[in-house]
Image (cartoon, rainbow, N blue to C red; front, top):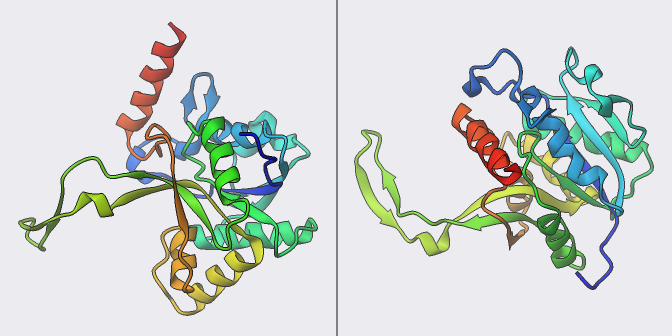
Length: 236
């Protein structure tokens, strides 16, 4: 990237339990290459020179975070996690306000269980959206044939996959606009699954920036196994 990248704050909602992993601890604390998934997810941001600060939202009674070296990093502040992702992000945004962040500052929200974000993708997102009026997110075009089904699991139609993208993170928006969208959507009891959907609900049209398909979110045991095998192959 030839242009200067904008300064930004980062938010990592990490209060989930990851029940589908069927593990003895929340999935963000499972090991990947000698570090926890959460440490990998944090690392890409902490290594970036444009980072102004980072807030991680954690369960109030989280016993694992204090054992990590990152727990004492002065660039990281802790916020209480909510019962849903939107609540965790809102609490983190309030913490950013307390740290002196302004409504016009860029905030990047990234999944705690998405440990394979590349520096190239992060820089691409920052560069492409630096002057955007709304913001946007990393995403990947759908590759497979997509089917819409009825309640019995039978195909109703084949969907035009050229119109479908998978939403990834980071998702990058101005602090003030994102705070208003999340807060208003919560009051309206709207279905919000990520920051982009809150912005959409508020009438905005986030921009999609194509990223790498291997920036996967660890949701099931096979996701983590795939990442472990990939890292072992790269190290061989």
